[in-house]
Length: 524
Image (cartoon, rainbow, N blue to C red; front, side, top):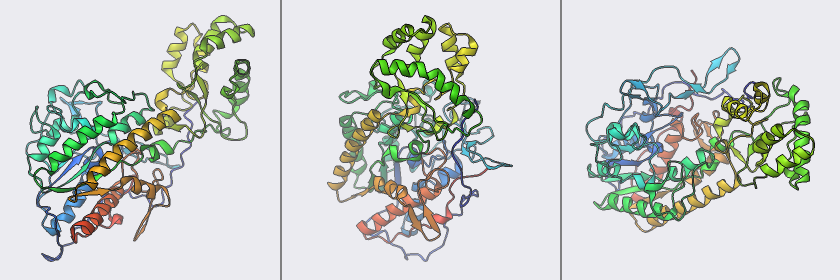
């Protein structure tokens, strides 16, 4: 069966050109910093600060990062030079010792064919950004993709020698001041007068992105034992966040902190429907009678065991849900095998069915399929074939039972289950409580409600003079093609929200930018 496609990409309104930046020249003194001082602006954060978009860090994305947009407006009111650790090209991806690294990918674009817009897909080209060529000097944009709260002040976090072992982030390794420095050290070495601090998304996001395959570390106070995809304990988050913010304000700098938008409300989790299997699909539709007949005996066994809700049935008239493995279910593999044998199925086949379907069900509206699952649903899983033939099945039978989401249950990494969504929501709520409380306790720290920003994008969108930006994947204009990070236009909206708060709280008159001057997604 070929890949089952379901996402309709609308080309109307998509911007494929390079951005036209707001470079108007104003009379000196026309704008005022008010009670703030922008002479040395430093921005600390993760990929959202770095300008990450479309699945990678690339030159145009960095130039349209919200800190760079802010710095351009601050320059009209006494702001100083703002430097960024720029990559070399718009391809994205990285080289490590001259070899294309799997630490980063080429950027994603919409592709165009004779049938119209059919993307997204990775852009062709070879990266030219070499990780081991460490940049020199200091950088005002200290956004480091994938960094977590407890890693911001970690000494040696950017050691080049640790890149190969995945214990140092490639992007920070490329511009760290030395192998023993920390992100916070390098930021504070610049004596900032104003800062933005937006950290914490990865403490919950990396767990969610991989379908909750990591571990909830609630109660574990030792982050050195955490895996990359684990949920950070809220107390660990609070301790490290509080310490980092205290360091940033110790010299009298004013700044901005941002809370964390709900990760399960971004297009990465809201785009793929739980029932994507279309009976009109020529690769899937004709198989439905055979599939239902095959599952009939299994469904009978489910009913006998008192779990009829696990039955698997595909519709001939409407979309059907995919088959998933649900680790929250009791594993009935042994009982299922025994019932199938008792019903006349041969022992080898019954054993395989028991192993394969002892903890499965069809997805429902409470499940969230991650965006990359769209590329594998309906595809034959070659790893599954190897597993099933290893259990003694003939190759042809193994292939029939290895269709992702149809005969082979989608693995945990493709689905964020309700219990996992609850863990994500609880952790995020705790992190946000820490952030808002710290901001409320200091008049020199401005609080930006990024959860509210995402709610607006999800509920009607945000208007500007030329249109509306929403969170709809690809066509809404707010999110890039990775479904996680904003487009340049989305980053411009974020910058404007911050400028509004600065003007209101610090009696400043910083001009906002026109979001329409900034692109959304790119068409190749």
